[in-house]
Figure 1 (cartoon, helix red, strand yellow):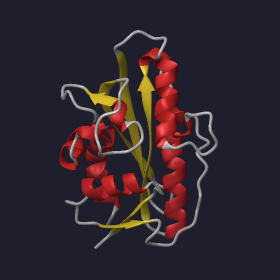
Figure 2: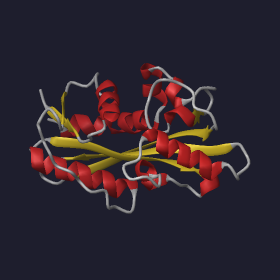
Figure 3: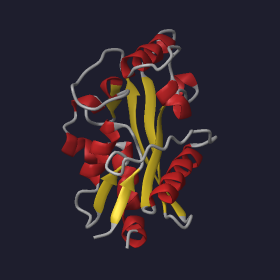
Length: 198
């Protein structure tokens, strides 16, 4: 069975990718499974550049086809911020998810509601030989001022998914895996995965 390396250290993302890719006839391995202690700096100017940096580095280091993503929350009232810097969007050193959510809501207080927003995800698939392909997924919604839900991570508790009346953190995994930006990007990548993981 071909192997695919999931190139992320985020346990929430690893769980999501495992669920999203469960139907493919591919053995999924994580960085922890390989004891691969490689940190890739996200210095790209776009989601695609950051995803490619990670996927290519992990593919080269492991000798396996690697999947990596870069994603962000884009809020219209903040001119698309936090965007590319979503995971670093807080004044604290090593901020928690709660720190990032609080900082976002603080910056939105002066703007009238609703606060339209979207999650965007770009997935990169890279082979050890340097071939790299991309797919993208978008999940529209809006930011709400109160946290709701016990699932998910990051900004999920304050992101109301369009058409559902629920936050991303209120969606059970099977529903999130149909609607999320990451789910849509992975679904678009499935034909590439089948060709690249042989």
